[in-house]
Length: 288
Image (cartoon, rainbow, N blue to C red; front, top):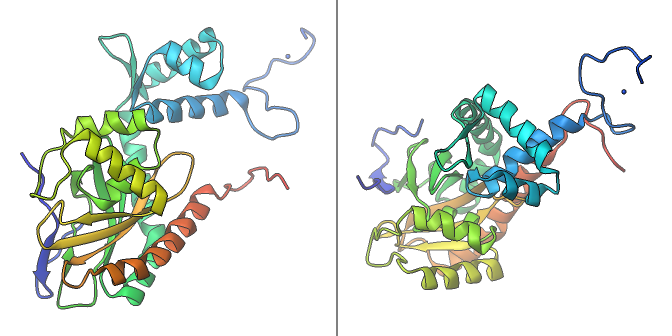
């Protein structure tokens, strides 16, 4: 069933957007000397992130090549994660991210939405149109926070709503940060279903669109998801695309001039949240 697009509603509408033998035996892995970090823990999270970067499913040899680790090491890490439910083995003998990660992701996305609210409010104060935060979820995007605009006729996006990645400004902005092969896997998963007559539905045209986004640093949904609605988005920078901020509104108000005025503000918000995401936690070692 096709996903519902964003909707324009009057302000009165109801909104729902949810070590030697003489040494004592150690009871836990020894931290790397001088870093305060535990190598096995670092490798575990690097492995999970590598699986995510590869689309959520990968073979042991792929992971060993990507992480530069011996195959037996990769196998031990993966088997431990399988036993814990964080990774599962597929019939193809490849490994996929497991369902126990979903609970962690749900809590993390809610927290990200909370951290983003001040930035979203600032965007609405400056531009007047609705401001959104979305994250990538497989071959879809999921909206995790929104602050409605100040106009009586404005965009409402329900928090938790999913939308196809190829026809949304937030989706295109995140895909543009990825290696081409990874982006292709994701966009093929969406089947590039046309939502309007403006939706990009061929891979060649989509490659050209992503090249333009990489050059300009922002993406635009020109009525590709819903007729009469335009949206501009900037992805949160980082090693892997994590989220994107956007501003959306009716096409007559979302002029090119407004979009050009919004882009620096969206970049500021994206960089602000990236700084919070990259901030080391309590007890983390800082290198300076």
